[in-house]
Length: 315
Ligand code: NAP
Image 1 (cartoon, rainbow, N blue to C red):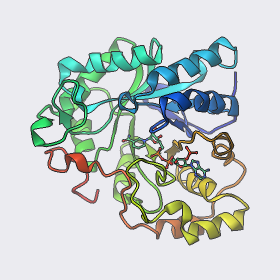
Image 2 (cartoon, protein in one colour; image 1 turned 120 degrees about the vertical axis):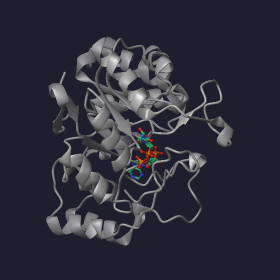
Image 3 (cartoon, rainbow, N blue to C red; image 1 turned 60 degrees about the horizontal axis):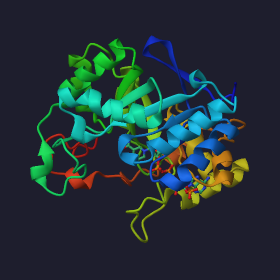
Image 4 (cartoon, helix red, strand yellow; image 1 turned 120 degrees about the horizontal axis):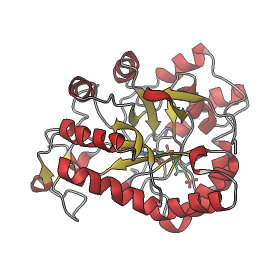
């Protein structure tokens, strides 16, 4: 059953990828189910999940509920999930994938991403507290193991997240199946033009995460600059009769970038989808881009000393 007419971008192999998805990071397990049900009712047909969001059972149940209700069929909804860094050794990749698949209660995933280039030691300690928790596994080998999941029909596309240009280049050079997507943090305070241009030149679709500046994340710094409250964003929103969030989402869509806002608030879930009846001008986009301050809200600082830490280079 059709949702809202969200624009679609085609991934390698013709897989259709809705350009607005629904984020689920830091949506608590006891609220994420209602959020996903509300999102599906509102018209979202793309849900962004991950093993380390620790809520995939609840997300999966919500999807099942909506299928049982007849609101959607499985093939109407695009599901992304991500391999956590403790599963990077090639022999662990399928197990990491299978855990997400089982928790979501699905029999295939539309898009499976490496959550980030650094590997951590396999085992239950999923979050490193010092360098001894790091692992050497090479993300190229991880990606090659993910290619087998495509061969087996378990996922329709595979890709990356938090990869810089050099790391993405290595994967492109060494892999049989091209990474379809690189999911990275993007908003006017972190424009990453070099990375965006590189991905576009290689036909790797970009998904913008934390498009609203992730104001509710549990490690938000008191007094941090909030892109959602930037006077320039507010001004552009006023000119278009839209909200600041809608302007920040449109900023990506108007540049051909997929966007995945998260909310657990029904009015915001709907608001974030009401972005198809306007566009920003070239001047608006330029002005928003000039706000760049290389400000990462999600900086992976817990693995800064890892050899594959992706954010040392400005790319
Ligand atoms: P975000 O979407 O930039 O911001 C979410 C926050 O903004 C929540 O606190 C939400 O509050 C609030 N919000 C949502 N809509 C709003 C609106 N219209 N007006 C005002 N406030 C609004 O942050 P994010 O969760 O960091 O990023 C989005 C998704 O990207 C994630 O959920 C996840 O799926 C993905 N992601 C991926 C990675 C990665 O490493 N690959 C990293 C980060 C995020 P309420 O929920 O209280 O409404």
